[in-house]
Image (cartoon, rainbow, N blue to C red; front, side, top):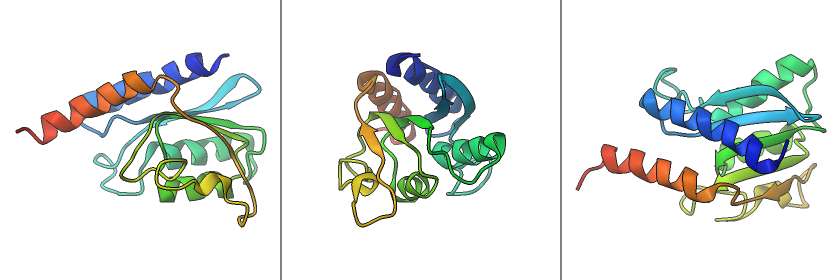
Length: 150
């Protein structure tokens, strides 16, 4: 499964979130070429600022694998993770993070800084940005233009 193929699965989840009125972010966890968990943002449905796609999908993957760490896992997400999600990515010891659109206002996996590659932490995550960035950015921009017209 290529990075682009995996990101397309995450992008489909973001599209689903968009149709539900959620910020269109989708995420999947892949281990040994198999999707073991998938989720999209659910902050509105769950009435929780913590219901980001990344946190939901990491929790699902941990339950699926039966361990608190995911050292062989790859996380694909359509938007650069925020500090909360990047912290969870480091704590779960994800091997590799692949994201689509950069987030210059809240992204901490390369934009504002790179929490996933801070050598002072107990784990460093390989970060691959900009996979299907244009598609994800367009979806996000369209969502926010509808929410904040004019």
